[in-house]
Amino acid sequence: MNAHVALLEPQAQPCGEELTRINESLQARERLLSASASASRLLLEAPDVRAAIPRVLGIIGEAAHVDRVNVMETRTGPHGEPLLVVVSEWTAPLPREISVPTAQTSSCEIAATSCGSRM
Image 1 (cartoon, one colour):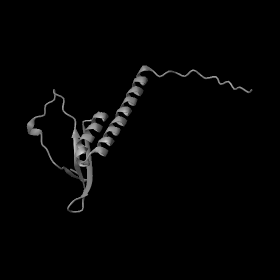
Image 2 (spheres, rainbow, N blue to C red):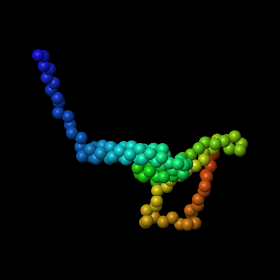
Image 3 (cartoon, rainbow, N blue to C red):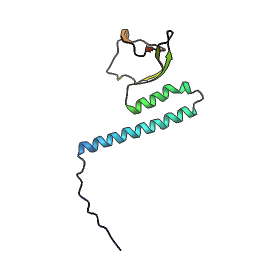
Image 4 (cartoon, helix red, strand yellow):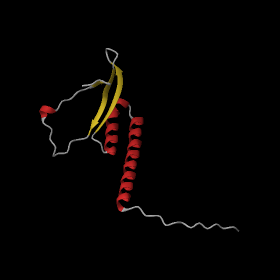
């Protein structure tokens, strides 16, 4: 019997900060995978897919720890210019300690922005 013995060099152990970073990354990945599965299930079971989109965006936004998720479509404007149109949007609720003056708030059903235009 030929046996080959391999000597393993002791490897440096990751420091506490690196382990924390790796753990947080794995947790974020798991959150996003779980949210993706939930969102897929919701879309597959929804009788009206378009009506389910705001909830789907909320699931994804909460899992990603972001404050806004948009679904946009490209369309052609009246003069042939390319437009981006927000067709659905989810925004995270504001924390209680943050208040937005009502004079600055507005709502739009569809916001269109010309692609490549400069302001």
